[in-house]
Length: 175
Length: 316
Image (cartoon, rainbow over all chains, first blue to last red; front, side, top):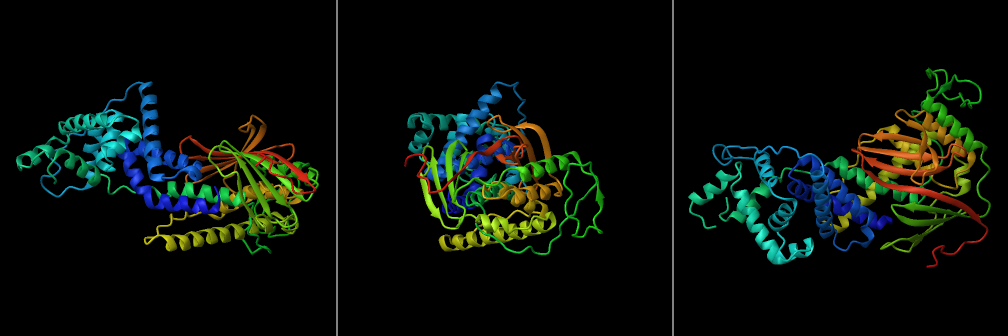
C-alpha cells in the first residue's frame, strides 16, 4: 500500500467506521463481538485495499463472512444461554433512547440465525434492495424476500419488542 | 414510529445504534499501523540532523563483564544506578552482536526481500542517494511502485547519527514527533481538499517511550543502518520502559529469534519484533491488537549488495 492508497484508506475509515461498527453490532447482536468483527473487517480491507473497488461493499461481504465463521465456530462449542431482555414497552413513559432500545433489539436479533440477521440488517439497516442482498450473499432474491419476511415476523413476537409492534397495530397503521 | 413491521425494524435498528461510534483507539491503531508500515517501506525518508535536547534516561550499568558500558557523560551523576534486568541483558547481547557483525553488504545498491501479509516484496535502495525501487509479487497488488526519490536516508546520513544512547534517544524522539506531525498535517490537508466534512482519525496520544520504541524498531529494519548505529539502537531499547524481551522465540518462518515487544496502550496494539541473536538483524515485525488476533506480519528474508542497479526480481 503506497502513501496515496493509505490516505484513501484512512479517509474511508474515518467516514464509514461508525456505520460499519453499527452494522457489526446488529449482525452479531453483541457489542463486544461487534468490535472484534469490525476490527477484523478493517484489517482485511487494509490488506487488500489496492484491489478493492467498492470498500463499503467489500466490508459488508467480509463482515458477513466473519460473522458466519464465528457463528460456526461457536456452534462447535457448548451453547451459551441466550438471555432475552424482557423490557416493558420502551415507548411508554419518558422518551426512550437508543441505549434503552438496544438490549431488547439485540436480544431479539440474537434469536435469528446469522443468515437471517444478515438479510434483515442488509435489507433494512443498509437499505439494500432484495437483488443487492441476494448478490452479496449468493442466494436468490426470492430467498431474501421470504427469509426477511419470516425474520421480521419472528422479531415481532420477541418479548422485548412485542409491545412496540402491538402499539403500531393499535394506532391503526397498515402493515 | 413508522407503520409497517419493516419500517419499525428499520427504525429500531437505526435508533438503537446511532449512539455507537467506532473506537478511536481501534481506528487510530489500524491507521497508525499502516502509517508505520508506510514509513518503514519508505525506510525513514525524513531525516532530522542534530540531536535535540531530550529527556533521555541514562542507564548506569552494574553488570558482569562482557556487557558494554554505555557512555556515561550525559547526566550520569543524576541518573539512578540500575542493575540490568534479564531483558536489558539480552538487549545488550543483541547490541554486542550487532556491533560485531561485518559491515554492510558491499555494493552501492542494497536489495532487501520481504514477505508482507502473504505477498513478496523487494526493495532496492541506493545507498548513496536513498532512492528506493520497490517491486511486489502477489494477487491484485501493483507489481511495481514509483521510484521513491530519497525514500531512505543514505548510508552517510545514518552514519552521522549519534551512537551515544542518550543522544540517539533524543534524536529518535524528535524525528518521530516531526514525522507524526507531518503525516497528520498532510492527511488533514488532503481530507480538506476532497471532503467537506474532514474527519481525520483522532491521533493516538503517545508517550515519549511509545515514540522511541516505534522509531528505534523501525530504524532497525533499514539495511543501510551500520553496525555502530544498530548496536546503539538496542541500547536505546534497553533503556526504554515497558520493553519486553523473550528469548527462545521463533519468527513466522520458524527461525530462532529473540522477541522484543511493547504494548502501546493508546493504540491497543502490541508491537512485536523478532531479532537474530547472533547478528542483531531483524527477522520479523508483527502487530497484534488487543485480544490475540495477529494482524499483519512483515518477514525479513535477505539483504544483498549489488554494484549496479539490479532488475525487477519478479521479471515484471
